[in-house]
Amino acid sequence: SSAIKQSILDKLMVEVEANLGTAMTYTLFEYAKDNKELFMENQPVNTVTSVSNSIAIGTPDVPANKKKDKKEQLSKTQKRKLADKTDHKGELPRGWNWVDVIK
Image (tube, rainbow, N blue to C red; front, side):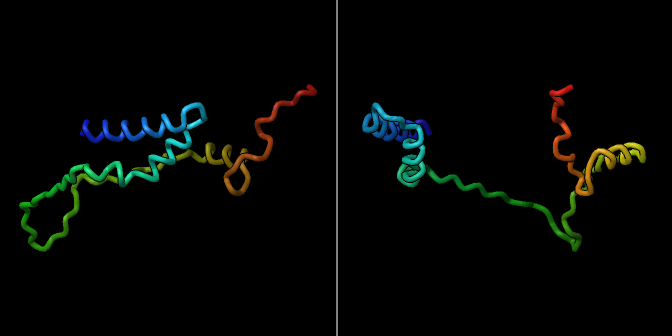
């Protein structure tokens, strides 16, 4: 709520005035982390309840539209080119993108 935001800003402004003239970004973040319970003490708790009106007849709840993500299929030549570029772990060799300055 806006009242909670304003109270947090007021408490942080008090901390700002205490640290005026110094580098205080890290100090303010640490102050906020250490006092988060103090900041949120007046925050209303919203509980969400959901009511399900379904009847189970012995079949498990499985979504009908659930599709698996397919991996991109590489052709044989694409796999061969990839294997030629990389080592046995699938990583590019050290220095693959270095520029030859001497040339």
